[in-house]
Amino acid sequence: MARILIAEDNPTNQKVVACLLGKHGYQTFVVANGRQALEALEESSYDLVLMDVQMPVLDGLEATKLIRKDARWCMLPVVGLTAHAMAGDRERCLGAGMNDYLAKPVRTPALLETVGKYVPQPEHAGDRTAGATARAAGARISRSLSGGRE
Image (cartoon, rainbow, N blue to C red; front, side):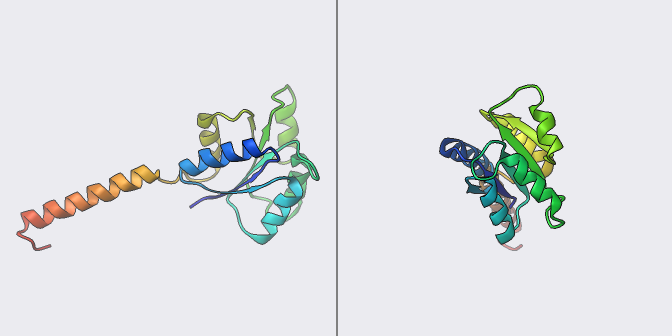
């Protein structure tokens, strides 16, 4: 299961992004600033970081520059999140070492598409249930056709 670190200082945005990703099978971990993001990376491994650009303590641009300087994380995908969808913001994010950029408020299709560029999309819980049900039904049919032998 893909592990995604969300660095976002706004509690509402934290919940929205974590919930959207969680519903689609991603495992999420939330921190409130860039310093906490660096600490989280020290403690565990992640497949992707969603990094708010403007946060207290250490902003997302500076945190990303520090991530890129560390050989352990130089290839870790970092996607910028910002409410400032203005000309030049994308370039600032990419210039800091971010791989991509999303404007807030985050829209589900754009979030899933962007995350999917960097980490495999997990199966939906509903898809897993449907798959298990289909396999179980197939096994019952197979046993029935073989007279109870497999």
